[in-house]
Amino acid sequence: MNYAVTIGTFDGVHKGHQVILKKTLDYAEKHQLKPKAYIMKYPALHHFSNDFVGLIYPSYKREEILQSMGFETEVFELPDVINITHGEYLDFLLNNGMKCIVCGEDFTFGKGKKGDINFLLAERHKKDFIVEIINDIKTSETRISSTFIRRSIQNGRIEEANKLLGRNWTLEGPVYEDRHVGFKLGFPTANIDIRYKEKIIYPKFGVYLVYGGVKNSPYKYFGLMSVGMRPTFNLDIKEPKVEIYFLDYFGDLYNKVIEVEVLKFMREEMKFSSEKELISQMIKDEDNARKLLSQFQN
Ligand SMILES: Cc1cc2nc3c(=O)[nH]c(=O)nc-3n(C[C@H](O)[C@H](O)[C@H](O)COP(=O)(O)O)c2cc1C
Ligand SMILES: Nc1ncnc2c1ncn2[C@@H]1O[C@H](COP(=O)(O)OP(=O)(O)O)[C@@H](O)[C@H]1O
Image 1 (tube, helix red, strand yellow):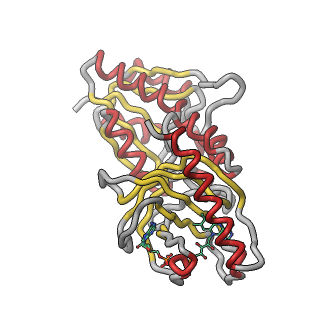
Image 2 (spheres, rainbow, N blue to C red; image 1 turned 90 degrees about the vertical axis):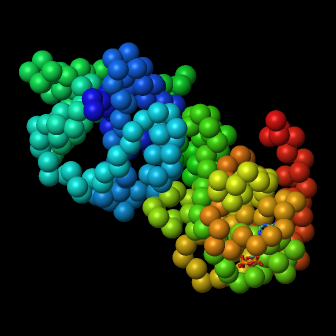
């Protein structure tokens, strides 16, 4: 099989990525090649420092999106390729059918990041492949990047993130059992473990309007998602909790995998002096959410 190839972490598969991906699809179609995306599971920072805040999407979600666009996908991890020289890396791609590579102008690859677009341009005649280079994609003032979108998510700027992603950001995970206090408060919540497979970013602590349900089920509901440490209860916990109260729903969700689109940041997490105060705020949250629904129903 002969391929038009693109390589990257593609975290978010955001609007900048989409330009490169579209170019790869167009090129593949014109030259009767199959489009192929090599996806790096984590950005390099994850392997070299503890500062990496987390992925926008797990690699399997990026695969899902890319496959729905028509790509064949292959996921690799940096430790698998870190010691491969740029020459060996290129030969690997060519031996696997690469006839064209589409990349951004800052693309680097191979041990010590020695492979770059100059290397590709120098090799293309000898080794008979095409190099297509895409210049930086900008909105009016910012370069669209996964780092920029991660910052938007961490600061609760969900609408900004959704705009740059070109779709609503989603979170997913299996539902686990906890203290059963939710039912008692009148707000049962499905706790989802968003890091069950890969290290996903936590959004700013607070309350969000979301839309979703059991993954791949046609039944979807609006809901309120709470992210944070539940300071009202002085719990001795280290990991933030992501929990969803679905509106107009009642049923057993334990162990099911839930997926929600994150639509809007509604308020910051607060510490209340009593359960009663928390409950009256949750009632207000539900009222506020219901007032917003018409904006998101189509
Ligand atoms: C809409 C909503 C808003 C919430 N806001 C807060 C909050 O501001 N502060 C807080 O400590 N907990 C907040 N929570 C989390 C509740 O404390 C949590 O759902 C409750 O303790 C049940 O926990 P459990 O899953 O352990 O049963 C909120 C939950 C929901 C559903
Ligand atoms: N509207 C709803 N939204 C979310 N979960 C619901 C809803 N109705 C029923 N449930 C069920 O209630 C469970 C949560 O109850 P809760 O008392 O908060 O317990 P836990 O502490 O285990 O999360 C969910 O996992 C789900 O199975």
